[in-house]
Length: 43
Image (cartoon, helix red, strand yellow):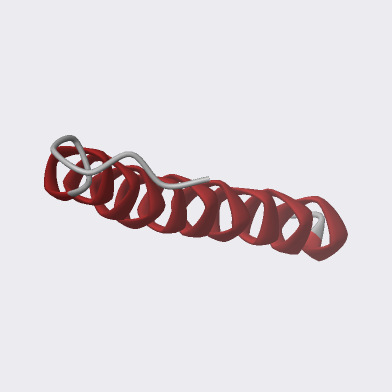
């Protein structure tokens, strides 16, 4: 087995999961912020 390819795949998978998790948290925060700030427009 080629360990380089294994670790590259593992690293890519972990990076992808991290991006999805962080993106989901950011998106949820943005959505809640938009919902909270819908009444009062701010510049």
